[in-house]
Image 1 (cartoon, one colour):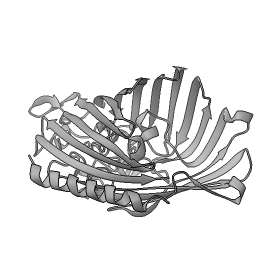
Image 2 (cartoon, rainbow, N blue to C red):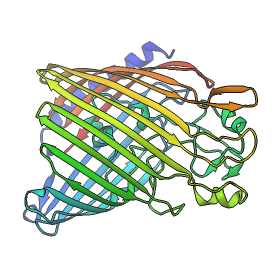
Image 3 (spheres, rainbow, N blue to C red):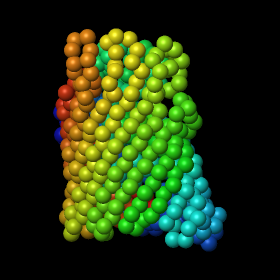
Length: 405
């Protein structure tokens, strides 16, 4: 466990900084800035997150940075060519990544009332519920659900030749090496990469009561891409029903080619077949009074080529879910908690059957304080338990100061 005095000191420092900055921030923008008669909208956000050292790599993302130790900033621009056509882009800078084009796409709304949208380019994801609130200002806590962040030992550009190769990497998703494909040690992927967007076309119908979205992209849930690397592509969709303003129910599904062509080229003797990722998700959100509760479950599987004995003949399957709740103690203060787990199926190695990846559980709880409109301070404690890997238990703390408009 990490130093409590050090964590308390960091929290106190950020509290002082946020409070002292309120008075000088009265003239900051609190909503997107418009130009050209409302045809050009500019929004932005910036966050600073500082947390405990994470020797178990529980909070690392596919950008190879810790989600509780980073600085992020982004600018979003929407240019409205007409009432029916808009061009949107987002440029983001982040610790360990530099400046990248996070999103760029055209949105066409052929019907009045925006009941039908067609989007093409590097587009927003349609699978799942958390992808719609992955920005820090939409997440009541600092960490993300493990389905959308935790690094497994699966890679799209390198695969194990045997089941034993895979089992040796169990619980080491932060740095994985396999003999087939790219031999460089690199991180594995999360089930759903919430912090990267895929490239393709999306059609969305609705809301308010009913909403449906379908997308075709060149990457997959775990590996969103700008350019194709396997000639397969992915179909993903979500249907949501809102019978009332306080309840939303959703179902998502996705299926696409996951493994890169370079892997097949490295082993031309591999049995034919599609190396796919497919997932099914359900989600719900309900609010009443000062309470807001959400939950989500995702069943996911990857197929990799069965190469050498002992072969990986079954899909590499995971089951993950979380439940979170937020309670507003005061108009400017809330408390939140999330319980989160991932479990994995078994495969047969030389020593017998065992789970192909280490199961992991996370409990995160914290508070958020609105210092002023568009300026939020959050604190969280994240506790982890894992049945494999070099570190099996860890308790981390973090603070985050967030500004957006």
